[in-house]
Length: 341
Ligand SMILES: [Ca+2]
Ligand SMILES: [Ca+2]
Image 1: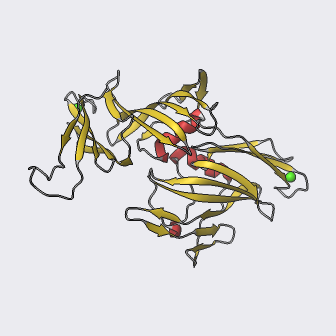
Image 2: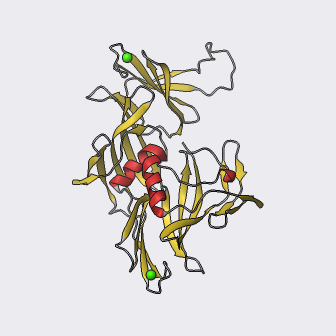
């Protein structure tokens, strides 16, 4: 619940007549509890400035000021913190974005000596493009188990350092299979043995699953993979598989990304990555298009060539990295862009 609402000036503005460019900061909530479990009370505050940037900080008796989260912009709807039944921090937030529908989350955060970790999430969602795709999910990262629309789900997802971006929450969302899109199925001779193969893309607004069926092997499923939203799949003129999606660089910046998949050395591999030009920051700067071919080791960033030693990793490695970190493996540093959270 919203405990109290106080409008205060930013810390530097101690008197009303002092002029400052610092944004007005509103203390939205303050909760007290022993969040680092050392027997002494701690304080957690949620503030929001007048540009909508949310900051949550903890004053822990064992560790002093700990920044929980400072780079999230919000309209303020559904925003709040409270103490959970087991004495942990519950952070509520929600979003209403046409392309992603509406969702509301409550994340339970636990201090584990070095940082706050997400240990539990409840989420509810409604897909604006597909009214029948709505529901709720309750997932506990400590057990890897949850309930989605009354059905038990499980995933090998452990508590991880909490962040508002892909590295924490989107994996949980992937486990809960929110915003499921219609499958895309393509056929072709993908592994070069002369018989037709089949690839199925099961996209969503948080991650995709890719299933490849060939005559050589049992169907191989890679999930979650290509974390992000709006997945599409097509074949190149050479018959390679291309998956495109909106990749998140942290909670604010997104860019269209394409992975080209080819069968090499006995496995399906990410043979190339292309990031389209992206706008970042305030004021806005444009990071130009970047394209890399891992088979040749050659790339191009904004028209400038570079070489890379990054290998063409397998889809299996790509999916394992996504599950472990919530991030994209093999993104060349030469392509720049904001650091992933
Ligand atoms: Ca304490
Ligand atoms: Ca084949």
